[in-house]
Length: 88
Length: 431
Image (tube, rainbow over all chains, first blue to last red; front, side, top):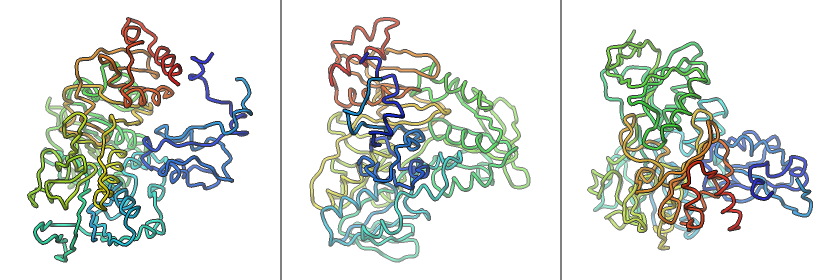
């Protein structure tokens, strides 16, 4: 159901790993750096948030660490390949 | 062109980025008195809790700053000599400007009781303060926290996470009463108690009593005495107006600027927490103490100073914060009146949150997931989203876009309405 869908996890972890990217909302960001601090491969996620650009980084694992740790809900996953998304 | 910026916070850095986008040749000088330069002030909260290392709070490396090509002077400005277009620094040296930006921010209001100057009485304005707090915050010690708003909770939670016993003193009967409603205050207070914080309502410190030259206890208005090793306070902030006042610039609660961030002196601009910016939409001049408006104002000021006229149009104030571990988004107008624990404005606060016109309140949710909407005639005026944040983005868009909610207004105001579902249905239908 589309209405209730918003309360569910946007996509399953499995789908995210296949076809997601991290997208920031700069208006929420206070540049605290928790995202960059927790990135296991050392991507400067905070810098992407300052510039309002999705994390299109070849090394990004889409592990979700930055999304989960951000205390202000700046980061979210966005599908990059809608056709790869299964019904959930 | 010689541009000078006073203040190394986000407004100043955003101004430099804006200037450099238009003028690669102009001479830019940034003068700031914070020994740590540019860092995330809101991030200090997470440094206190131990979620972050202090080095992680600096968004720019020295190399990145160098690329912006500006001169940095880590000194205090003591005077603005408007006729000479010159600044006087603490060491008597002078710096000349053609266009000046004042972005010196705000600072904590002092705790005005006897003993407040004792060692161990602490505030949280800068990195220096955070380091001072951490030095004192040792496991097994006891702290008294006084004040309200976001900063007071940052102190409470920072100290608690370091194993310090915390007494949190509230002058009134509940936490942040002019932004949160009764139920929301209760949610926060219960969570604080669950974290082991001792709350004292109707409690006012009248004296800090020293022990060996350091804070050793506090005396309360009702005669009670609480033993402690440190006292931390956050009773509000005030814009740093000394320079502007001395220079004869127009000030009210902050430095008065028009929508181009220009003061009554056409060569002097102000942005960030120190500025009281004119909002052409409401016709009011408003103080904000929020990161994003400071960045936006700084950027607009920079463009205007470099010659591209750009109005700063204020969006409804919006802040996402964690209160007692609960993610909370505050959008638009949500409360009214004054809070006994705060004088003026708190950090992470906006005056707009309290300019509540006649409106109806729709609310839902229990404990950790709570949504409150302020419903106007045709639009939503404000919202508080606690816990689950999925609705905060749609609500922010509905409120900032003045979206006509006539089709769902009645439904929202029906008693026991499932307002989250109504909003979601309405929002998804609009997409």
